[in-house]
Length: 272
Image (cartoon, rainbow, N blue to C red; front, side):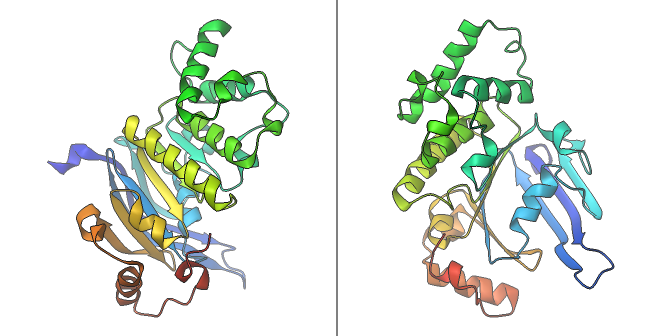
């Protein structure tokens, strides 16, 4: 039965960098992952665990050495980033990456719509589009819908990340990838952006993979928690399993699964 609920399947995905050199590193080591429709999965792990590489492989930034990626029943293994763009929405760690500073908010949004090839929208008049952009930005509560002609470079980091979030979701991609998208923001702004993320993901019932360094956030958000270590997924908990856990329990679960102590201070301290 669960077959039709599966939206994204990773089968034995391996990714090696600098192959055959002294710097060779296996970033992903036979990863299997089954993502159900509507899953909001938070992925945590120490530096070098393979979290960002996982997102990059799904988004087509680089092909895996071996394994299969099936999205919506379609094999997208090795498909380039450009061709994946209309099914994969993405928000990066750096607000400057997902948005163009020298273009207006409206131009940035139009670019996102074209990238996602939203049917009907390409032919829509500027007025119709503007209405759509306003409607998409208004729920953020940041007043951006009144600033469509402003240059994105004039926005704060938090406003830019909020815009990037709307741009990544406006064309309703099959899956949303969030790569430590609050890591560079101050705590208050980070919380705002996280709450907005939660609102959009819930409202659009969007299947989401969110990478974070922060155990507290991993426990608080999402319906599934995955811990990665040395290119493998070592812990995979559902909502009930993580509901009553404290950070310490998570550390214990990780150490039991990984067979070694968690030494990455940045995770233990909950720092971004």
